[in-house]
Length: 77
Length: 310
Image (cartoon, rainbow over all chains, first blue to last red):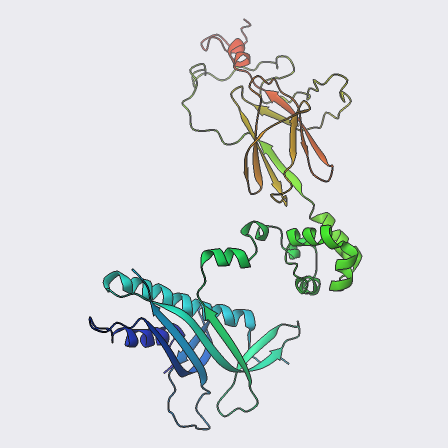
C-alpha cells in the first residue's frame, strides 16, 4: 500500500527511538533500507510516495526498489 | 520525447523536501510530550529513473517501472543546514523582489537562455550588465542585443508616487467648522491656495526655471508634515535616489524596499522638490504647504454667514 514518504520515514524513526530506555539511549542511527518510491499528483501538488518493499524477492511485476539511507540523531536539550 | 508520467526535476525535488519538512515538523511536535528529541540528520536516495527532455528543454524524471531495464541511477542527498549557511549560499531576499524577466518583455525561450547564465530577474541583469556589458551577455546567452537593451531600458527604475506618509490617527482640530455648515467657497490665497484648486508650482530659487511647465505635479502637505514618502519601482538598495528641496538635499529617514521617507526641513515653505536617480533622470514636483492660518482666516467664525468676508 502506498503511503506518503514522510509517514514511512516517521515510522522508521519512531521504531528506532522507541528502543531507548533509561539505561540505553540511542544518540544516532543510520538506517539503510530499500524503498519503493513513486510520485503522484494530490490536490494539484506533486507528492512523493514511499513504502517498504512488498517482498525481498525480485519479481517482474513489483515496483523497483530504491536504496535509501536515513540518518537521525538525538538533539541536545 | 517527454512521457506523461515524468515530472520536472524542480517539482520532484520540491516534493521530496516537502515530505522532509513534514517529518521535521512531526518530530518537533513529538518532542513536546516526549523526553527524547530526534531530528532527521540527512537522507540519501538512489533513484532509478529515466531521464527525459521535454520540448522546452526542461529535464524530467520518470520513475522506472517493474522489471524495466536501463534506468539511470540518480543519487540525491539531503541534509539539514543552519540559517547562516542558507544566507551564505542563497541570493538575498531583496534581489528576489526585482521584476522577473517575463515582465521585461522577454519571451520564454529568451528567459531560459538568460537563466543559463544565472540571470533570473532585472536586478541580476543590471548587475551583469554593469560588470560584463550587454554585448557579452548577448554573446554568451544567445539573446539578441536589441532585445537585451529593450529589456534593460524597460526595467529602468521609476518613481511611482510621492506623497506624505500616512499620518497617525489624531483628534480633529478644534478650528474645523461644524459638520452641519457647508464649507464656504473661498478663492485661493496667495500661491499656496486651498485644496481643490490647483496652484502653479513655485520655484523659489533665484534665477530658477520659471519657465517650468505648469503641468508639474503639485504636492500639498500640511504645516505639520515632517516627512515625505517616495515610492519607486525597480530601485535596488544600493541606488537610492537623491531628494532635494529648493536645491538643498533632504535626509533620508527611512529606507525600506521600494519606499523611502525623507525629512522635511522644520521651517520650510514649500518650493521645488526634485528626486534624482542614478542615471541622471530628475523627477520634479512643486511642494505646497497648506497652512492652518489659511483655513482660519477664511473660516474664523464657523457660524458666520456664507460669503461674509473678514
